[in-house]
Length: 215
Image (cartoon, rainbow, N blue to C red; front, side, top):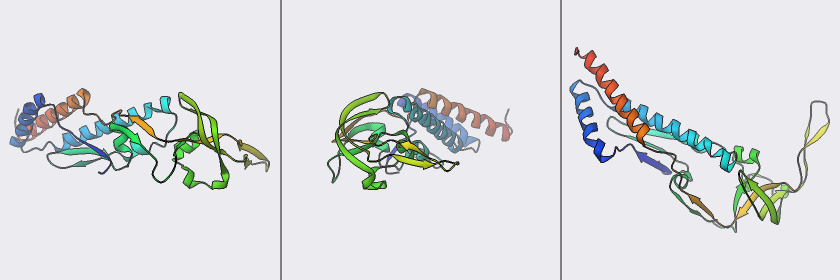
């Protein structure tokens, strides 16, 4: 996973407890693998919830980051993460600068954000540059350079009549020289995940102990 990943590593004060539980599992012929995997799924579900919650602040998005989250699991460890190049900066924060261009482009229209469409995906003639456009994304608004729709866009209805679905002059992409992103961790091994892990380990121990003939 080249984007971002976290290891499910308990706090040092919980490490001794984890070692004891794992040792107990081994004595009854069981493995912590199932509990690690279920805890990773717990963390992924929580991460997707946190990412969806950002829609209220930043507006619609493609959801690709949440969908990309996965795990690498073996008998004694699990790693949770994403291969997307922007996964790490969304987790840890940082500054993004354009490479080979003057500006970074940020999709403004909800349908562009949901689809993950960028200027390179569209016909250049369909857009024009405006140096001082009124831009609004989610709860934020400002005036600055942008790419706006060059012409009205029409769609033919079932009755054969055309209707305008996109208006010329509407802002399609905001253009900025750099973006400073505050780290907002979405992959978190916090108290709820920690409690879930130990509950799953205990459940697996009880099941294995009973299967081995214990009481």
